[in-house]
Image (cartoon, rainbow, N blue to C red; front, side, top):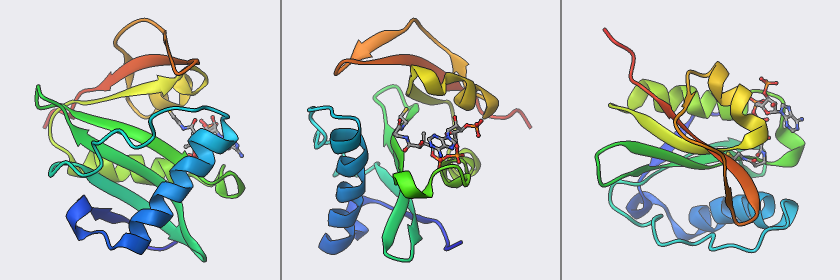
Length: 146
Ligand SMILES: CC(C)(COP(=O)(O)OP(=O)(O)OC[C@H]1O[C@@H](n2cnc3c(N)ncnc32)[C@H](O)[C@@H]1OP(=O)(O)O)[C@@H](O)C(=O)NCCC(=O)NCCS
C-alpha cells in the first residue's frame, strides 16, 4: 500500500485536487445518484485536511477533516472507489485521523454504516435525519484518555 497523504488545500497541485474531486463525484454524485453541493466551499479553509491513499492510477480512498466553530473536527466525504472496497482502505484513513487529530471527532454516517463506525469507536449523538434524500445518523468519537 502507498503511504497516506495528508495535506491542506494550499499544498495540493491542480491535478491532484482534480483527481480527488473526481473520486468524490464518482462516488457521491454519480454512483449514489445524488445532486448536491459537492463543492461546498469548505475544501479551501486553512484548517481543512485532505487525506487519501493512491492506487496505481491515482487516489482510491479519500476523506476530509474540517475544523468546526466549536473546535471539534468533522470527518466527511469518506469514499473508496467501488473497485477497491472491502480492503480496509477507509479504515486505514480513519485510523490515521484518530492517531493525528486532537479532541472530539464528529461525522454524519450514512445509516447503513452506523455499525461500521461504531466498531471504530463512534457513538450515536442524535437522531436519524435526511440529507439530500439520504438517511444519516450523527456520531461522535471522544479522544482516548491517557
Ligand atoms: C463506506 C466506504 C467508504 C468503505 O470503504 P472501504 O475502503 O471499503 O472500507 P472497509 O474495507 O474498511 O469496509 C468498511 C465497511 O464498508 C462495507 N463494505 C465492505 N466491503 C464492501 C464492498 N465491497 N462494497 C461496499 N461496501 C463494503 C462494510 O460495511 C464494511 O464494514 P465491515 O468491515 O465492518 O463489514 C465505501 O464503501 C464507500 O465509498 N461507500 C460509498 C460512499 C459512502 O457511503 N461513504 C460513507 C459516507 S458516511
